[in-house]
Each structure stands twice: as structure tokens, then as C-alpha cells.
Length: 412
Image (cartoon, rainbow, N blue to C red; front, side, top):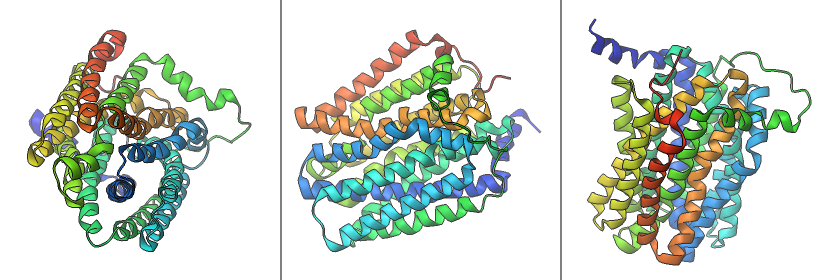
């Protein structure tokens, strides 16, 4: 077998494990549901308030649980059975979707009720993210970490293609419909996770909870400059460069489309991400991984600036696809390095901090976008955010030489 064929074949190895397939399928269903809800919530809130700031508050409501609970939820993921924690978190998330369905079905036009549901879903995600991230390495051998993470992140990207488009289409039949489908999808994800047979290595006894045990993940990240650099770079890139909160404004007021147009725009980054994920599954990142991550973040920022300048739907979709493709490179590098460098008994706490820095930053970035759009307008806010992301890539190249000079994803 040639080297090229061997690499391509190896790209499928991680996906042959039954428990890992269940994990990816659950990730896909959960991601589809969240993406559908994001479109429905965004359009519903903006139709009720006509306020970009209100869209930002929805992002803040999702971010606060991760920020407030991250140290505790990471401790839970390291002490208790990650499969059970993840299944219970998905169950709570499905109930939040059910409440959103009832709000939309009964025609409640007070966004405070929507924010309460978003907050509840955020609590569920605060528990699910560290458990899901820490569970992944338990399901495949270490030599297949990079490919497993590529498949796992591609499942998320696939969900972000199907979910927004489906949410935009279903919204046409009534605002309650996407929330009903999201409820069923998340409930199914909870069942799939519960069916995972391998719970991972035995968990430690809970013992006493102290600041030392809760903050261990944060201290570990601070001690590993390559991890700190990668996570913090994603934090600021997503914080400044994320324009997703403003897509309802762009879709309705700039491009004059309906929910279907918003769905297409929100799906576009995921299209780019899944295409890049498929490419990386066959041609994994080799050497100069750190430099490739920094370059990909700079491209992410540049494509965001150009998106802000574009007023055409199809050009904007193409630019958002480039945003997603470049972000996928960054995700694979960061996630693989974090998993490879972290001992198993620390993965939950490290993953919790990572979730705040990355996933939580997306929600906080939506709040930041809503605030700046309220000050300057949506388009200037997008352009300034993209330019700030490019600046972050240049600054991090100097601040974190360990990240810049990282060669292999997994160093034995």
C-alpha cells in the first residue's frame, strides 16, 4: 500500500469503533437541534424586538452558565461516569427545547421567557461539553486521536449544515415547528449516548471538593503554553470575529430574505468546515501544525471582513464557507493538542475551561456583536471584528512561540 493510500485508510480507523459511532451520531443529532434552535431563536427574538442588542442578550444568556459553572462541571466530568453525565445533560437540553416549543406555540411575545429557556439549555451545555470532549479519547486508541477528533468535529460541522437550513425551512410552517423537531432530536441523542457501552477508565472517588480540585484544569492549562496559546487564540478570534448573532440583521435588512435566507447563511460556515474536515480525514495535518493554525485564524478574520463588505447572498455564503473551513483547521489543531497533552484524570476539567474559552466565547461574541452593532451598525461591527481577529493571529505568533513552533499534532 502506498503512503498516500495508507494515510487515507487510516482516516477511517477511528470511526470503526461502535461506541465512537454512537458518540458521533449523538453529536450530530444534538448539533442539528442546536443549529435549528439558533435560527428559530434569532428570527423569533429579532421579529419581536427589532433589536440587535436583544440578539446579543440571547448569546449572553447561553454564555453565563458555562462561565459560572465551568470549574464545577469539569470536576463532575472527571469524577462521575461521563456517559451518564452527558445523557442527563442532553435530557435537560431536550426539556428546554420543549419549553421553547410551548412558548412559540402559545404565541408568547415576551423575550424574557425565551432567555430563560436559553439559560437552561446553557446549563445543560455547560455539563455536556466537558463530558463529551473528555469521553472522546476514552473510545479510541491514542494513535487515532487526531482522526477521531476530525470525525467528531465533522459531525458537528455536518449538523451545522443541516440544522440551520432545516430550521429556516421549518420556521416557514410556524415558529413552533423547529423547536418540536429539536426536542425529538436531542432526546434521541440522549438515548444514543446512554447506549455507549464503554464508560472509560474507572473514575476517582468524589472525595472532598476544594478550590484546588476545581481549579486544577485552569492551572494545568496555564502551565502548558502550547495549550494556553491555542485555547486563548480561539477565544479572541471567535469573540471578535464571530458574526453569527448579526446574521438575522444581515438576512432581513441587508439582503431582504426570510428565515430561509438566514438558514442558508448559518449553514455556509459548516459547509466549508465539513469539506475541510473531509479533506483532513484523508490528508491529516502533518508538520508545522502551529503555523498552520495561526494562518488559518488570519484567513478566518480576512474572510469575515470581506463578508461584512459583501451585500450579495451567494458571495456572502462563499465567504462564510471560507470562514468555516479555516476555523476547522484551527479546531483540529487545538482539540488534538489539548487531548494529547492532557492526562485522562484531568480531561474533564481541562475540557470545561476549553469550553468556556471556545464554545462560550461564541456566545459571548454574539453579545459583543450585538452591543457593537447597536453602537455602529451591523456591517461596521463585522468588519472591525474581522480585522481584530487578524491582529490576534499576528500578536499570538509573538506571544506564544510554543504554539507557533509546534510541529506534530501528537508528540510521543
